[in-house]
Image (cartoon, rainbow over the protein chains, first blue to last red):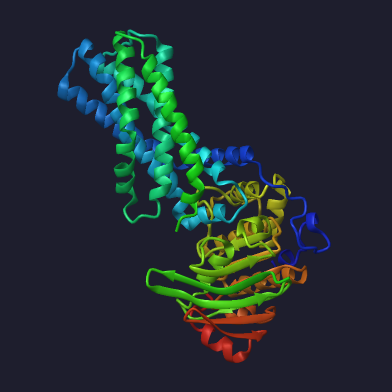
Length: 249
Length: 228
């Protein structure tokens, strides 16, 4: 063993000169990609978030289906609200997991002492959460079709657009407030307490827009615009403030 | 230019004063061993130097930079916890952390793992490693970007005595190559052969600085956390 430990450092810094050798500054895009890949790999191996989210949303869908036993017409009116409520509550589970795994072994400290940009971490976490929640939504669709006999009367592309904008609205704030609450004593309670009130405008809009598309009564142009503005505003705010949150004590 | 310059560094946690005005310069290219009782403020000092904590008062300059983040590429930190993902294996962990320093070369990760006497081919996840192996991988993570300044917080916890001595020798080798190394430890005896200077912190104050590790300082701190 000692022979191995006595090895001289790799050739990049030969001569023992202090410095970083061939090391270059990490690019935001590259760190974002590697952090995202790492998060997806961790989730694939542990399945902490996706299993809890799936189980929780399945419970919500099944309980409501048996509780109300709605007709196809009633389903179209309530499905938007029900779907997004299930997604919102399930999202909190994923958001808590996102940061919980950074706290185990204090891995977040390793990121904080590195020269990598805090923005990379935030974007990777938000995109990762978007992927997890979008996966959940895709898996929930057949459940809604089966339990609520649901068919959309409006165009599907609008539904997809609303789903994408709404999901981003939930995860961008959730990722930010999840990071904010990691140092609080009861962070699993704190996250919904902060996230839900701030998500109300987006939640009302996404429910309204989804219902409009499902019932085919009108085009949710205003809702889509509102969600787009909400996403841009909160993404900008979260990105701007994330460095402060990450380094807060 | 000192590698680390502290000027009246004070750190409070609520009403508790963890550091009570530490002023000191540390020359580059030396290996410093920081000794002190539990709660003396050693880890707090190291975390401030690493930029993980802000001092309540006072200034810190690292490698000539007053903004610690500007020295991040030249600083390595090994914390009390392993700072590794349990669900990834050693190479996956190091590959990820190397990316944070702009290193895309796998051979650097493999070399770092080999330097701490582990096999880069190990496919077991870090969560299944023994505590000692995790400590060594953690050291590999801290040195993989070949930092000028290395900050180690209790690197020998749960490491067997032979491995601890080998790790100490590795740190001595890094010092010989011009790096500045700070080691917070209770196992002063392990560091004795390679230490240039020991710094004793008592109740948040810098109580003493001595060349090497004198015998009278080794005994009180050696007993607190025995090497397994």
